[in-house]
Length: 126
Image 1 (cartoon, one colour):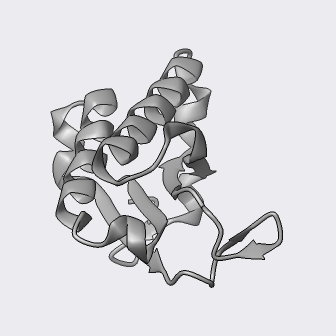
Image 2: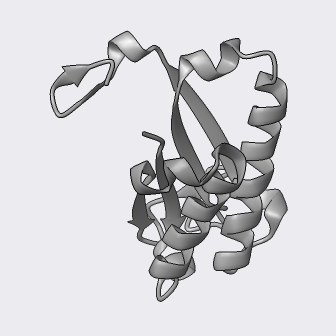
């Protein structure tokens, strides 16, 4: 089950929540296929202006930061580079279309975790 957490300034997110959740879900589906849609989990964290800084300046023009938790086994596949590239491009495009920001300011962080270190419903590796 892919989980994405998008950290954005409140001013970027306000009123765009549903659009962003849908766009991020669609981005993952474009890479993995429609079978994954019901398992995509998106969490939006709105950060108040002044509580996120860039270059040592609070309240600067921080771009959205998306953390995508994926299974580490994805990186063992022969097409891993293609999958990583596609996820980064699709997620970046989804955020740029959904909120007011430049693509160049968007960070996408893929965080691979071995199946043995995750659980769903208390079942390890589920």
